[in-house]
Each structure stands twice: as structure tokens, then as C-alpha cells.
Amino acid sequence: SAPQHRSFNPMQLPSSNVALSAAAAAPALWPQPYTPFGLVPAPRQHLNVSQRRAAARCAGVEGRKLTLVQGPPGTGKTVTAIETICTWLRLRRGPVLATAFSNVGVDNLAEGLMALGVNVVRMGANERGLECGFDLKFDLEVATYQEKTNFIRSCDVVCATCIGVGMPLLNPP
Image (cartoon, rainbow, N blue to C red; front, side, top):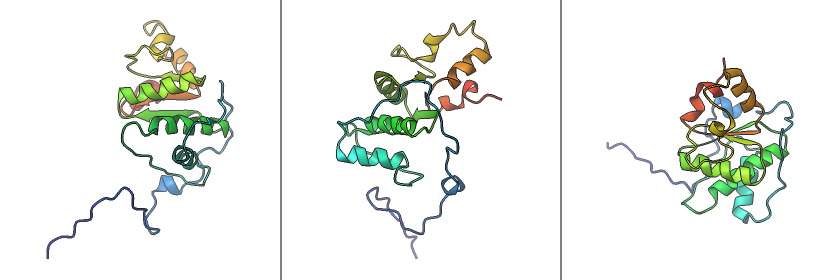
């Protein structure tokens, strides 16, 4: 007989018997309260109902450990991600590593967080010349490795691409 092909339907809820990964089944990620170094903005009031609900789910307010936010361009995914990160900081869950696949996505996250006054650094290619770009914080040729890692550790949010997360500065020995 021919193999059965199941199509993926993103609107379908997962069945209750889905096996969880060890990470998803692990205890809370933030055992110790985190004290942010910088400003933690108040909740944004202009989010629509869907964005508020997604941000609450992503932030773990509803007890979820994993939430996927997807949608076409212009539907508020970045706004939702920024609110989620700010919610984590309000709940004293940090520091936060915010990542996106593309440089544009990371720039949008960093720029949105910076506009709210969040203590953020944008690692990697800073093509837009964002003030929060790591490359603008140091004379990269002169600063020591320790100075650079200490600076990164003093940031509440570090933004990098998925590939950039593997850079040595973000994975100290």
C-alpha cells in the first residue's frame, strides 16, 4: 500500500499525547530572580487582543514553556516579541538572548527595544548603524576580551542572528 502523507496545518492544535523534549519538560528556566541593569518599560497598551494573548503565552504567564508565533509580514510578530521580552524583564526573568534568522529581523528587535529604553546590545552586523550596536561601543581592535564580555553581561537583552549566537563572545569558556 502507498505511504500515508500527513500535511502540516499550522492552525491545528497539537494532540495531547505529543512527546515533549527534555528541555520543554525541565523545570523553570529562571530559578533566580534577575535584576535588570536598565529601564524596564511598562506594558504597551496599543497591542491588539491577539498580540497581547501571544505575548502572555510566550512570556510563560499561562504556564506554557513553548509558544510559536507565526504570521505573514505586517501582522505584529516583532511587536509581540518585543512585548514578550519586556514582560520577561518585568517578571525579573533575564538576561534575554533575542534572535532572528535575518539581520533585518535582529535590527528590528534591537531598534524596537532601544526605542523603549531597554538596555540592549545588537551583536554582529550593524548595517543600520544602530546606537546599540556592539561595534559602536568599543574600539574593537583595542578592547580586551574581558572588557567585551563584561559589557555583554551588563546588558539586559542581547540581540543576534541565529548564526551570530554561536560567536565566541556569546559563549565564553
